[in-house]
Image 1 (cartoon, helix red, strand yellow):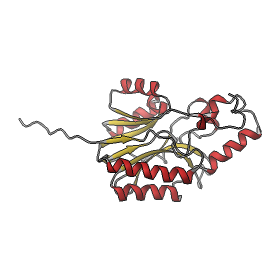
Image 2 (cartoon, rainbow, N blue to C red):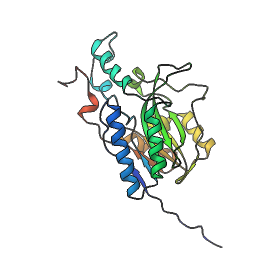
Image 3 (cartoon, helix red, strand yellow):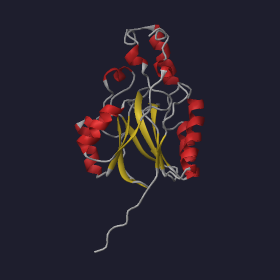
Image 4 (cartoon, rainbow, N blue to C red):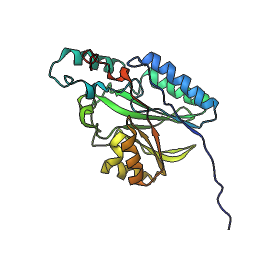
Length: 240
């Protein structure tokens, strides 16, 4: 009886901060990190949750963030929206080209802005997967934004028209989940239907993701990084 050959693959996690709320500079930095990963033989590189271009940690540290018609919060949200990306935008195109030119798979979290259709003007916490051929192979908005995140991001649309099935990659079959998606029944059911062998989870805090990995009993690549002061940028957070 012949034993199946063990195939070793190299993957990379970009544990680096974006240029907060500056999508042009964040794009340039992302491409440099992708190039660095490819030069070291990685076939896949994963970036953290809403890496492009910054996680709104100010939602959790600014007590006035949820006040109605509050000018400081409206201002920082406007920056978030201005520096979000659309699937049809030039930033997505350049990331796809980088994946193709460097022959590497890329998974990156983005603040996605929908430009047309029923969800027009809505922001989503989305994960994008680019194949080594430069194709947008998977688009996964976070199923349920967690707690204060619902102030800025919309939930998944129940018709599931925005979700794409997991596809084969140089690393095999996997699915994408954001932070607590692995705890959602819908997220687990989607994974089972796609028969994925592993998961790529994007998060800002490690503990919950370790617990999820044990619960689902599948290999999990956790792409996360430590939040810093820039992530809490808000006019009223300087003293907190």
